[in-house]
Image (cartoon, rainbow, N blue to C red; front, side, top):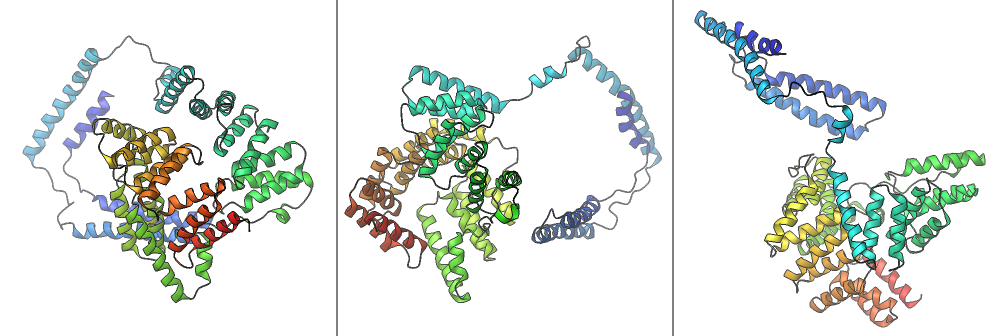
Length: 535
């Protein structure tokens, strides 16, 4: 090894200068190979025509840039010249010096720092020393939650959280037991019922038991389009020998799924097996999923309405919709989904400067929020825009921990608490998100926007269900802003469930008056008012 190192250092010193090759020439070769690879991928069906065109355009831009660097190179650059005799003598002395110094230096360092008598470390020991940050983090969470349920066995949230973390560790039987204990203390939400049912199925090695079936049926009673519940109920029918019912269940699941849903291939495989068992042609019973999202930020209903309009009406409607969205984002800049919708819509309308401006504003808003920044970076990459700098190996969890630690020293940083709440929400740490939003609300007790976000965080921590606390906060929002749309909607529905029909309708009608004419919101509100009236 020492000889090889010395040769690598010394041999060039004995040579004269050789002609240098500009890195741009290597770049050109790489880019040409990439274009050829793109064409091969397109022929194999890996890339669509649009994807290939976009990639080829970007590579062509890089080729032009590399070619420009070559043209800009001075005429004498890269042309070698012979070394003088005195120079050759100096380099020969240097080469001999390296030949002696490098081996002696390496040997001396090894005697000082190395351990010559130590045996080789077995592979198993090396594997044991490999980083296991995620595993350690889960183990630490389990230890804390186990202590929490031991200290207060009547705390349903502690049992629920313990069950969910057990499930992440694939300790499915313990997960089901912890969730079941929580259900004895507080009624199950659809989300928790779904997690409980899946833990039971996994613990039974794929068999859908009666308890699991009951859990999924409870989910569908409140969420008729829940994908996980529909799949497992269809699987239960199949395992019970009711193959046709299972086939129909999976077919319905495909009908309600978007065309780019990641679970479609798996469900089609189940359907293929069921069709084979029944001896029927799969093509006759295989439905089409919902149309794929066009990537413009619009719902399927909105696109259908636009398609029915004339070009002039369509353009005017789109402009109005985007202006309304931008106005909402000015009022609530923490709406990440809203920013994503606006950016996609501007891009789809070929307004690249407006799309970039919206992206830049969103990046500014979420500058200290790691997860939203990561999502914006992915969107920028997808649309070919200039996104934020987010390395692929960024330690998101570490960033969130550092933000939380900083806020302990700077508890009056309102935007910091909002960023932390958002990050915890994306990480699925609902209780931590709720605590962070409570700190934000403490700093802005009279800000309807902050209070509405706090209510939403509490709902999210409760599996999407309203609580007395979230409703109380929304009523406070209405006392500050009587026309707050979100608060009117949720409080109005709560009044309807309490039997206060007139009050509920009055609130929903206020939303209806605020909604733009021809908007989808008006249709939804009228439908809900009819339901409340019993029509």
